[in-house]
Amino acid sequence: MDHFKSFTSNNQQARERFGHADDITELPEEYRHLEQRVDAMKNAHASMIRTVRVFEQEAYDYPQHLQETLSQSAQSIGHTLSSWASTAAKNTNMGNVEPTHAPETAPRTLYHALSRSATSAAMDLEQVPMSASQSIEEPGASIEHKLAELLKKLAVAENSIGNARLTQDRSIVQSFIMVWNAFGSQINLALKARQSVRDARLHLDNRRGALKHAEQHDSVRAESIRGEVEQAEDKLVGVTEEAISLMKAVLDNPEPVQTLASLVKAQLHYYRESVGVLEQLDQDMSHAATTAESAYRASRS
Image (cartoon, rainbow, N blue to C red; front, side, top):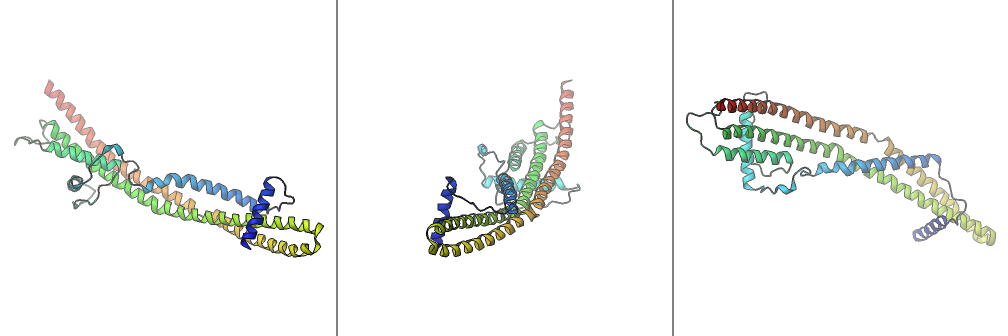
């Protein structure tokens, strides 16, 4: 029976396509208006989720050409970095930051890559011994040791920003992407219901066409087909009501608006935290640059 309905629907579809069908059933205006609205929502959903899904990939800003060796050396760098962060946090409003064990993984973000590069560079510069009378705070301290201290601060700052970016990404995945994936499934249910309406409408119009032909040529056959038409009409009414209900559920769902707000909040928190870190780093860097310039001019005078 289902095979027969599929055949009649395909036959009716072909007749309509080539302009050979008469009396095509008009669906309710409400239904057609809902179709337009759901189509717009489907396109909007696809446009957003296609791009926002990038936050599921940790390395979306990681320079692939960098060719880091993220192995034991990266773990050592991570442990050294956490020790520096602990030292830097002392006597500040950040509170105490306990050094951590060597991390099991090295995050693949641009900020973490910058942090690892700065850490490695600082460790290289610190291998140069300082004289017993020389201190990094003294005007005469070597430029490489001054640079090493600044690289430490840069490494800690970039690592902090990288961690904030990962926190943002996790928040976006949980509060936006997962919800929008579920919303996409809801849209698909409505689209599937619409396909049922389309199939039911094609089947009804096919049976109506068959009834019209039978009434002209075979009254006995017409009586049998008339019952099929009534069943097809009932079927169309039922699936249309179901499709209307599902389309309204899509359009009444507040989650797309709520999750869009969550997306912006996650980004705002990330950028605010990053700005705070960079403002402090900028002050330290600007002071160091001015001091280095003054020392250089003094040494040449």
